[in-house]
Length: 187
Image (cartoon, helix red, strand yellow):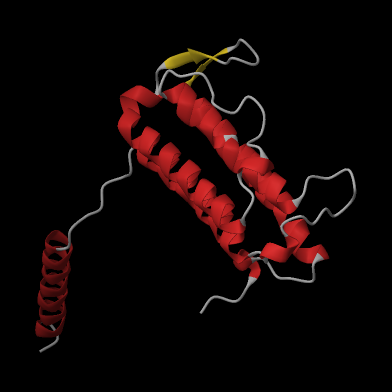
């Protein structure tokens, strides 16, 4: 009897191991994302946050300046999203279309600013997808600094830049007594 208990335990253990291996083998395994997929995910994430702010912030506060020397909310948002074309255009071998910020006079309504923000994010995402891993590793010369860099490095610079301006836009919410979309409880 004493010898059969360990044997039964061993058999049951082997059966459980075999069952778990079968389940694991039957479960589709996710592959690691490619470098361009990682860049795209980060681009889309900061873009999602900026779009949420553009849509959410009250239109009557679009001209708010936390202090007189600061850009308005709309100008800050246009600066952040307009700079995305510095990546998109350069990645496509073009001269950046906004050497300066997009003009508020050309985008007067909240609806126009929201549409511009969505388009800037979507155009950049499309450029990242079109480039893929090989294209993002191409070398370019930065038109401002004249330094050589890979396109992927420029993408990360713009993602970081957009994130910094996202942080500034949070201040506009706070001085208005509002809670930014990302700080609200998730439903």
